[in-house]
Amino acid sequence: MRSEAAAEQHARSYPTLVIGLAALVLALFCISLAIGYAPLDLKQAIGDAVAGRPTLAALVLTELRLPRALIGALVGFSLGITGAAMQGLMRNPLAEPGIIGISGAAALGAVTTFYFGIAGTVSLALPLGGIAGAAAATFLLFVLAGGGVGTMTLILAGVAINSFAGALTSLALNLSPNPYAVSEIVFWLMGSFADRGMPYVLLVTPMMAIGWALLLAAGPALDGLTLGEDTAKSLGFDVGRLRLQLVGGAALSVGSAVAVTGAIGFVGLVVPHLLRPLVESRPGPLLLVSGLGGAALTLAADIMVRLIPVTPELKIGVVTAIIGAPFLFSLIYRLRAEA
Image (cartoon, rainbow, N blue to C red; front, side):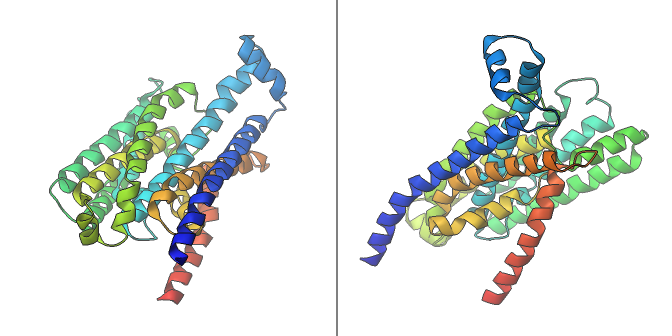
């Protein structure tokens, strides 16, 4: 009786939670459009942009601030939803989007374009290189996961891919004959939403949307997986197919995110933990709210970056790491106390 009442209460409160988080993301998105290093009359800029008047305010809005805010929201949603999906699949609270090696391989693909000088000659070479690296890692994971291996083998494969990609990235830094290329690689690896135009948004949005759909569709199976793989199979869920679906969704979402912004850590780890109590620790409902929470966190961090009077601008990956590392320490301490 009590469980039925709790389920009914959850069914009523979940839409309110989703609407509240969506409203928060929208508010932060608008603030992101209004915040910058130069004052901008947002109302006038929007009016000029809608009317097609090529004023300075309209150009600043459409060429700089709008793409930056869109990428911040898209990347944050991708990291948040993928973090929740990986924690549900691994049944491990310390799992995060990079655990299967996609983010490290995407970073290597982008670094390769810097190393060979392609990024400076082809406009979309950087994100395309990152996407190619993510695709290569996904192929390796599909080869392994397609053989019916367990979750532990999938984790080990991800660790191996991350280690190999990190080693090759370090090799590129070590052997690069151009010091400017080295500095570009280092700054890009820190993660940033700055100087990403609308072509970047148009390139990655379709892939991210497909990835989100794959992850959200896995919600019921993740709920069943909380009872164990054998129980999930008895309920009619194909665990092997679920792994493939989540790997594909994570590759499209996180691979595209890393390809355009560089490595941004801790978002996919922190956000699911903050929101999990609000959905009664159910992995399925957590997916959407973690995506919205991730978008809110990255937008808020990017606003903070622009408000801090530091030159050059702090990188978003540095800010999220500063926020996330203490949270991780507290999480480990809490898990140790519970054990």
